Amino acid sequence: MTRIDSSTSSSTALPSRSIAARLGITSVSREDLRRRYTQSGSNFVKIMGADVHYVDEGQGKPIVMIHGFASSLHTWNRVADELKRTHRVIRVDLPPFGVTGPLRSSTGDIETMNLPTYRRFIDTFLQALNIAPATFIGNSLGGLIAWDYAIRHREAVNKLVLIDSAGFPMKLPIYIGLFNSALVRMSSPWWLPEAIIKSAVRNVYGDPRKIDALTLRRYVEFFHAEGTRAAIGKMVPTLDFNEVDTNVLRTLNVPTLVLWGAKDRWIPPAHAEEFASRIPGAKSVMYAGLGHVPMEEAPERVMADLRTFLGTPDAHAAALNAADAADQPTRRAPA
Image (tube, rainbow, N blue to C red):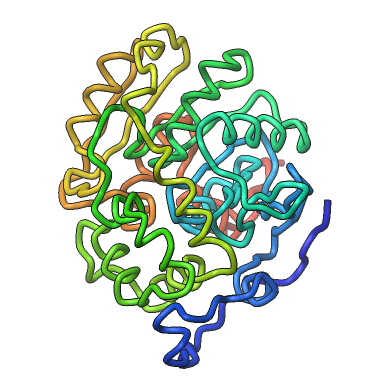
């Protein structure tokens, strides 16, 4: 495993992109992504032939966070900043996304990321880091990977949090479904305007005005990264949720919290009740006004429910109390 000891390397300035870059004619190199988007807790581990990027911070009982389609471990930044005060928090860039990028065969061909491949990937990753048992928090595709892991490794999951999780039959969002077109799959590695990516990211938020320029640029550069579009073209035709067995959720005996944005345009909010009704004892929270990534759009609202579910104190309040106590004069016992 290789550790990166730099601080978060995303620059506060946004250099202009060339016309070719904005049109997606050129790709962002993996070296540039490492330089711009690794963090102080960044590490790399060789999994299935790829240098997998992950962040491992804090101490205590482990929490594993798994992001969704076309996202990255950065979607958890603000939630992880608080949870790492009381837990060991592990976040991973799933292939073919983020800094990690595509998995490749021994001949260099891009691997197709379907559910069986993700199963092998997450099992190998967790074994490499010797993480078990742990609490799992997954969003979207990451939610599917998390609950599927809990079904297959019941003894390895203490608690489960599903945030706008995939799993039930649904129509793919238009921005993903485009890749079911052979023409799009063939052309996208050589031409995909950033305006389309920006529109997709705005569609993920309940209130697009909450997206800052740095976050928007990060999504664009990860999507325009070397090999990512070709990998997505191979992956999307395999996304058939009709073949996912959700009836097994009824056998899941793990404390579960289901969180959902009421303005999710990618996965129907009605699926929150589907999860909550199938998983015994699951609790559900619906966030008015939020979209598909509530932990990124409004982390303070999500953290309030995570604290209650995880039994974690408000780290900010605890720090203030400690500071107040330190300011008090030392009391002496009466003589």
